[in-house]
Length: 393
Image: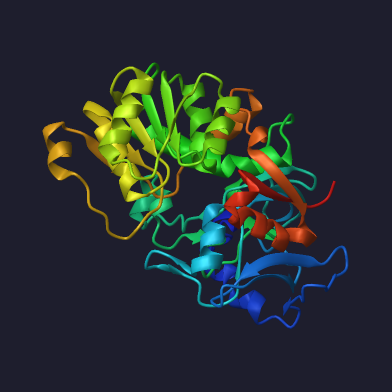
C-alpha cells in the first residue's frame, strides 16, 4: 500500500520552517551600521532587540520549499505594536522580545518565486500577506472551528520570536496570501491588516445599520474603524481623542462624524455626558480602540441599557471596571484578539470602493530609511497616522 503524501500547502504551515534561529545563525545575517548601505538587491529588514534598539539587518534571501511562496514585500505599515515591542520589549506576559526580532506585519507585495505544489500563485501576482499562520491541524480545536486567531501554535510574523514582514523578501505559506483586486495598490493591500482588525471588532460587536456608535480613540485603528463603521451604516458616530489634530483628521476622513475632545481632569462620567450630548442620545455600541482604563469607563457610561462595549485596544494587564453600573444596565463588555476570516472581506470592501484607506497614509519611506520611519511613527509631535515603508516602484 502506497503511503499517503503530505499536502505541500499543509506542510508549509509547519512553524519549524519559520524558526527565527534559521536567520539569526546564518553566516549571512549581520546588523548594519547606521551609515552602511548594502547592495540594492540585498534582503534587508528592520529588527528590534531586548536593548530597545531598532536597526537594519541584512539576512539571507530565502528559497521557497513545497507549499511556500517568496514575496517581494512592496509596502509595509508600522503598527503601534511594532513601536511597543521596540520601546518596551513586550506586550503582556507571553509576547516578549528576547533576541533580535524582525518587525512588521501589515504588508503586501509581489510573488517572485513559488515552491513545489503551489498552483494558485504565479510570479507577478499581487498579494496581501496575512501575518498570522495557524497550525491548521484537525486536532487543533481553534483551527477546526474557524477561530484560528486563537491557535496555540500560531506563527504570527513580527510577534516574538518570529521575524516580521518588514523586509525585502519574505517567505510565506501559499494558503495565507490573499489576491489583491486589480484596482488596488500595494499600500491598500498593506492597510487591509488594520482593516481586518476593525472588521473583526464590528462583526463581533454586532453593529447594525443605524446604530449610534462611539469610537474611543482616533489613532490608526480608531480611524480605520471609523471608515468601516460608516460603510456599515452606523449613525450617528461620535469619536473621542485627546488630540484636536486627530479629531480634525477624523472629520476630514468622514465629514459627518461628531467629535469630542477629551480634556484632562474631566471624569469618565463627565466625558460620557459630552459624548451623549454630541450624539443626541445614549450610544448602542462602543468600539474602544485605546485600551486605556479611563477611556473604557467613558465608553461604559455612554451606553444605553443593554449596550455593547467592544474593546479592541490593548491596555494594562489588570484594570478596574464599574461592575454594578454594567450589571444594572445589562451592558455587555467584549474583547478581541487579532482577527480571523477577515482578509477576503477587507479586500472586497477596498477594491469595491466602499472604504478608502489611502488618506490614512501620512508618511512614506523607502526600505533603506525604515529606522527614520520608526522614529517618526513613535513621535506624537510628528502628526503621523500611518507610516508606510515602500520598496520598489
